[in-house]
Image (cartoon, rainbow, N blue to C red):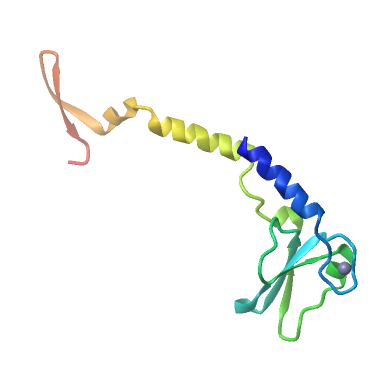
Length: 128
Ligand SMILES: [Zn+2]
C-alpha cells in the first residue's frame, strides 16, 4: 500500500531532523522558509522534506526568531497549514471519479421531447 509506505518515510524524516542553528542539538520542531521575493520568513510546522531556503529549528530557536532588517516573519499555527487531502477527501474524490465513469441517465434531462412516432421519440437539445 503506497500510502502507508509514504507515511512511514515521513515519520522517519521528521524524527531524524535537528535544529539547523550552530551548536544546537535539539530536535527540530518547526521549519523556517525564506521567501526572498516577498522578504518574508515563514515559520511553520516541520516540513515533510528539507528544501532549499528551508531551515529546521527547535522550539526555542523558533520562539526567539527575529527577522532580518526589512523582513517580515509570518508564524503559521499548525491548524492554518494545509496538510493535504485527508482520507475523507480522497474517498470523496474516488466517489466522484466513479460517478463520472458511470453512464448517467441525467443526460436525457437536457433534451426535450418534441415528437413521438410509435416507440420512437424525437429529441432535441434544450440549448437549441
Ligand atoms: Zn535550536
